[in-house]
Image (cartoon, rainbow, N blue to C red; front, side):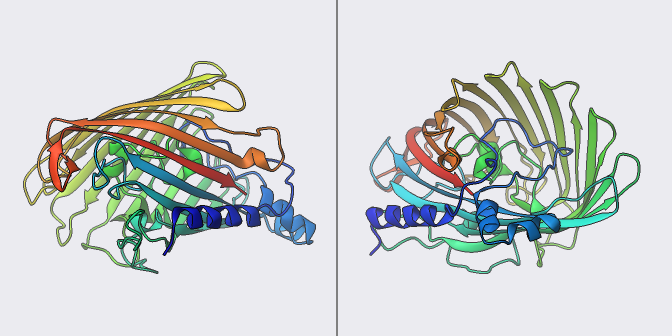
Length: 416
């Protein structure tokens, strides 16, 4: 039987095995900057590439334009409001009842970023093993199907880790104007400020807005930088979280417009239009997702996101819109500590009826050794979260009798 001590030991061994050599540069730091469609830069060379240099393979990969990197994320969630059978609904990756440990993600990414100044071909493949993969697994990509089961240990009802390939696409650069990039394949959705990648989102738990949107989409997209301030993208996909199979016969439109007038302000509007319900090509789901981020100074950043979802069949063929707003603030005390805050209101039909949900999360990103060439890749993110609803959604002793819940959680991330 797997105990928490055994699981923690396994993670430590995995982390140690990733540290194969010192790197010339560190991997991307945690940030509250939104991912703008125009800014699709390659990740810096990390520890893994440094290790491959030591065995003579790094130079060959560099000559091919290939970069191999990844991360390990694991965390623990404690429901504080009631007994161990309570569920706090703190986001799609930590919703198991009770107190639990998760090996969220062990990621290995192989990437070649294209040069927009010439005709070039690149792409990316992500391999992810962990409990998160059981959540963002797409239709027709069921490499393993046991992710919904729980561990046999009653003290840890976390999900079983599985393997998934959330991204596999080809990029083609066409040297017209400022450079046109065409992407074909499966990729993370541009919808939502928060992402499934732990190094690009500020908290371990996720917003309710994040739960409303897809994780991956499969299709054809075009990306173009109009100038230094404006960038656009657009294309068609099979739908939300669809891959080799589709729940209906329709295609969707997916697009974004990004405006960056200066180094402080970034505004992005994401749009998705198309049928998403199974065996239903008539009811079009429309999502408008504006994101505004402002960097006040080198220490303080604020971000706001709103979402509106129209769907004529979202709730058993009855009309019901979902919408909400979320605000984020980050303050970097120094290289070691960054304070993060999030406040959110969300109106949805996720629990079988119309509900208004509110959540407030406070956390800190800790980089214990920010100057060390290896341990600077280590981040620890403890947080405290308060959820409240007008309805009794939170369980205690097997019944929904609570309107609010407290959750404490923390994860550890190591990039390589």
